[in-house]
Length: 332
Image (cartoon, rainbow, N blue to C red; front, side):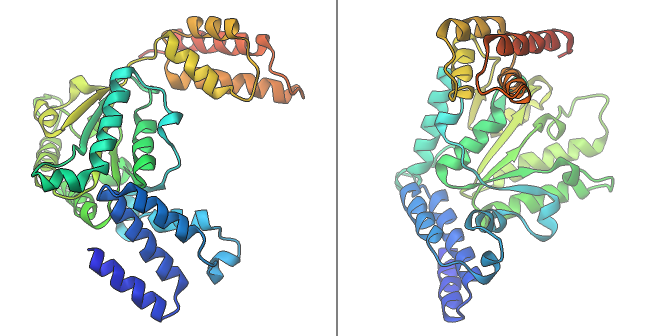
C-alpha cells in the first residue's frame, strides 16, 4: 500500500496537483501512524502543514479543514462512517488508574507494532469499552486516535442498519473492507445495538445474522486499524463477542478525586479555591463526568450572561445542585 501512495505522490508532483499531493502525503502519514511509527507520522504532518496553500484553500479553506476533509469518508462510506483527525491527548481525559494504565500500554504496543511483529506477536487493537454513559468512552477513543496520529472513524448506526434483509451484514462488510485501506481508529459506539445476545427472545433472526457476521469479520480482520466498541449495557452483549476483544476497559462513574480533577481541568482559567472544589466534587459523587462538566459550563454561562468576568462560588454551587437534582430524577 505504501508503494501505491508513493506513486500517487510522485504523480501529483509531476502534475503539479497540490490537492492530490497533500492527500497522498496525509495518507502516507496515516499509514506510518498505523504501523506504529508515531514520531515519523507526526513529523510528516508538520511538514504537510507548511506546504503552500492550494488554490481551493486560498479561497477560504484552511489547512486544518483541508486535512479533516481528506480524512472524511466519501461516497457510500459517508453514510456508514463519519470522522476525521482528532486533537485530544491523554492529558485531556480523566480515567481510573487501571484504565489509564491499560490505555498507555495499548498506545505503547501500537507504537511498537513493527518491533512486536518481528517477534511474531501483534499489538492489541480490538478493544471493548464499557460503563455508564458520560464516563469517557468516546473521548478515550478520540484520545487513542489523537495520540497515534490516526483519524477516528465512528460507525453511523443510522446508516448501518437497513430494513432490507441481509443489507446490514453487507454494510458491516463494507466497513471492515475499508479498514486495511484507511488506517484509523474505528469506533462502534452504542455497540449493544449491534451485538445483542443471540439468545434474546425478543429479537428477530436478522440481528442474529448481524452478530454472526460481526464475529466472522472481526476474526478475519488483519488490518492495522484499531477497533473500539463502546457500550453502556455490557450485560446485553452476546457472550461470544467478548472473546473477540483483546482488551476490556471499564469506565465507571467517577469517584470524588476524579471529579476534583475534572473541575480543575474544566475551570483552569479561573482561580477556584481548593475547599470549594472539594465541596463541589463531594456533592457530585454519583454524577458522570459529562454531568459534572455540564455543571461547570452552566456556571460559566451564568457568569457571562450576567456580564461578569469572575466566577462566583454561588454560580458553581447552584449549577452543581441543579445537576445533582437532575441526576437523581433521571432514570438510569
